[in-house]
Structure formats: structure tokens, C-alpha cells
Image (tube, rainbow, N blue to C red):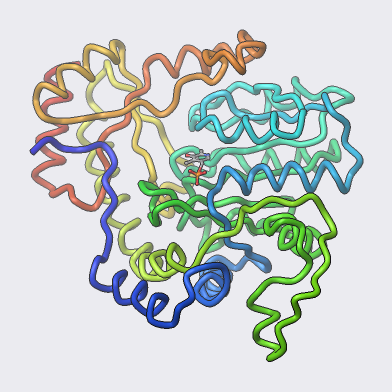
Length: 375
Ligand SMILES: *Cc1c(COP(=O)(O)O)cnc(C)c1O
């Protein structure tokens, strides 16, 4: 069977036991396991607030929406973002009629602080930093820039479940306003689809509870726990139906137990790749700051002829991927064309190597051999 680029490993029996608990209890919606998972996630990461959502995409939307609402941002105001990311990062800006401005990327494939500074105008309100492949890049410098220019900082941590720096989750660093994780089907902590939004400020965490559940100002769990079913809730905002559910949370709670050991295995594989490719002059390895604590959601190489290599590897039964195309190549973001030339150049040469729990050391050695043969 062909080797896949990303392949989740579910702890099936344990997940089923947790899901069974929901079915037997008759509680599959919001509350119960979603609350348990929020508590476990706060313990695991050190975030003060956590709200479980149906995806990271909706979390990024809420992040932009709430900051816009509360800070009086206007339509057309700018948010500096990354051109090489999953489109959700930049769609979130568009949902709120704001304008993505693309900063160029550094060697870590994260946005470059030096270019962020160049892109700041009097309409810039925030920066969205993507921890590419789990990397922290130069987030510390980006925080300094945001503080200096009074910009909000949104961390798209879709790849960063488990990434630490000296034992600390970078999303909890002072200066990060909000961190949004993804538990999409192939992320490091896979469910079906879900995500978590973690604010630094309690006020925004409270707003999130309402906006993520149709603008309603109390959730079912809180109400039914009081004994009386308070059906007389108010609707304070034109909110959304963005909350996560207990079935997904059951899977998340189970998978979380294994996240650190699985990330350790990811780092082992990444180290094998680094070693295997370091002497090939045609291959450029994408480094990571704090690599020894990186979640390594993705392992990318920069190669001279990406399409050729993809095809040859596919014929050899090794399916690699591309993460990500420069977003300004897509129609909806084409207005940004030319803003980030380095990202455009790199994204044409990026290839994602297989990296997941199903790979044996022998698989990895074989992949390294084939890549070195074909490049
Ligand atoms: C997967 C991903 C998202 C979206 O996550 P969902 O949970 O699928 O909505 C956002 N940003 C990045 C960088 C991603 O990889």
C-alpha cells in the first residue's frame, strides 16, 4: 500500500468507549465532554481560557470579529498575514470585510518580522502569525513589533498542538492576544473537525461564549446544572453556531493523552529526515527554532523540481503533498500578488514529506533513499 503524506492514528477502542459514554448518557451536543476537554486543554497548555469550537476556521473568524467589534476597527482596515498558509487564515480577515496584507516569509516559512514592519500602515490593526508546521519561527520578535505599534496579535496555532518553548506554550506568551488551535482530521490532535480558541483577556473569552452560540448569553450546560431549566435566555448578539460537540470532544480527550508521545515520534522522524538530506546539495531543509520541542505537524523540503519529484515518488508508492500554495495565486487573494515575492518563489518548490504515526524507521529510510535518488 502506498505511503500517505498525512495519516491520523486514532486510539480506536478508547475513543469508542468515550463516545459510548456520550451516547449512553444521551449527551452528544455542547457541554459534558466539551467542558471536560476545555478544562484538560487549559491544564495541558497553561492557557487561562479555552472555548471548544467546531473548527479552527470559525475560531479565526471569531478572533477577528471580536477584536474588530471591541476596538472599533473599520471595514477595509488591514491585518498583516502569511501568504503561505491554509486559506482559512486569510478568509477569516475577509469574513469581517478587512484587508489581508501579505508579509513575506523567513527561513522557517513563518512571516518575517522585518517585512511585517515594512507593511505597517496607519490602517494596520493586527497581525496573524501562523506557526507553520508547528514552528515558532520568530514569534518573539513579532510580539515586540505588535507591542511597539499597538497591534493585536492572533496566533493561528492549527499546527501547534504540543509545541513548546522551554516547556511553555508560545500561545500563552505575554503579547499574544488570542490563540486558535485545530483538531481537524489530519492535525496532530485529530478529531473529525473541531478547534479551540484561547484568549488572554477574560472579556473576550466571555464574548466568545455568546458569539459562538447564536448570541445566547447562557449555555445549556450551565442552565441544566442549576436544576431549573431556564428557557428564558436573551440573545444579545447576532451570533453564530460555531460551538464544538461532545462526540468530537470525546475523541479529542482520548487523543490528547497520546499527543506528547506522538509528537516525540514526529521529532524522531524529522531528525531522521534532517540527517538523511543534509548532505544533498540540491535539497534545502526547512529549519525550526526550538526544534526539540516542535510539534512537527509538517516536514517540508525545498527542492529544484517539485512536480517531477512528486510524480516520481508517487510512482514509487510514496505520496507527498504541497503545503501551501502562495494564497495570492488564488482568485480571491490575487490583489496581494507581488506583496511577498520570497513566499511565491519558495511555495513553488515546497514538498511535504510523509510524517505520521504509521511510518516505521524502515519506511523513513526508504523515503530518504528515494528522494535522494530522484532529486
Ligand atoms: C487546518 C488549518 C486551518 C483550519 O483548521 P480547521 O480546523 O480545519 O478549520 C487553519 N490554518 C491552518 C494553518 C491550518 O493548517
